[in-house]
Amino acid sequence: MRVPLPLTETTLRLPQTGTRLPPLTVGQQLEVLVESRKPEGLLLNVLGRRVTVPSQLQVPNGERLTVQVQTLQPQVSLKILAATTRATETQAQLARLLPQQQGPVGHALAPVTRTVESPQAQSLPAPVRDVLGRLAQALPGRAEATDPATLRRVLEHSGLFLERLLSRVPVREAGQVANTDVKALLQRAAAALRQSLGRAVPTPQAQGGSSAPTQAAPNLVPVLEGLLTQVESALSRIQLLQLQPNISQSPLDLTVEVPLRDGADVDNLYLRIRKDGGGVEAEGDNAEPVYQLVVRLDFERFGTAQATLRMQGEKVSAVWHSENPSLSEAIQQHLPELESRIRGLGLEAESVLCVNAPPPRSTDDVRQPPSGIFHEQA
Image 1 (tube, rainbow, N blue to C red):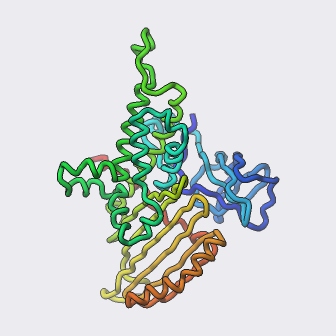
Image 2 (image 1 turned 45 degrees about the vertical axis):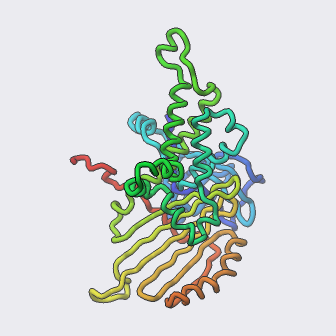
């Protein structure tokens, strides 16, 4: 049996120089072989050609990735559609019981919203169609996430603060929270999908004689199972982000992910705020702490843009990274405004710049602790 591998990356970007491949077309699907891992990345076999790709993806040697060609210029980028590995019986059992994280919340929900917007939605069971429609409507747009007046509400209803919200509202208002909070809607969607799948699968009694009534047609079972996988993936990711402040060794470490609707696309907004001890150059017990804010926008159409802001005392530095030249150019044009705003707050802008390159390393090191979520001896 083969089980899905958890993906920490969803796109492989081939080097712009020294890569000679057979002709490719955008949208083409193919399998690539992971031959080995090098210090500089993964050695892949792509259509018989060996290519070293910068990547932190943890994939065993000899495994195959199903990818789709996203772009050809200025470099070839491949979107990972599936990654599997051979499983022991124990791993296979765990894979059946535990939902897999498929990366950011927005990436997990993109196929769900596309299904909701497609004609296929009309064939879904009514309870599933209703709750998925509410989930899609609850996802904020870019304008809401960039407006300070609405950003607070967007963050409050991102799912990370659901339990806090429910503990503070009157019982009569709990239903309103359940219709607007992303985590609450994901829980309701998972319950509706499981219920529909349970009715769609014949029971042992039905197999022996009369057939049991079904909620969904048999040809919808794969669709419902796929939707349940994506919903559980997003829900699992939110739950891990809720645990992050207790897992991290930093005095302050808060990570928020917000899926953003952009027409039929779903982009992902990643925010991480960390507080560390005094800087390397600081001496003595009066060293001022260093605050770091990472803002990453994963656009389905334009790739990734990431800003890393560091503040110590009144000194602030901001560095943007983006592999998309047009996106980098747009960011570059707004850097003077960003620098002006930093100084308008009475802070010193040490450096504000944009680099047309991928981030130096993955900042998404939110992981389950090695000891597990539960204490085995508790």
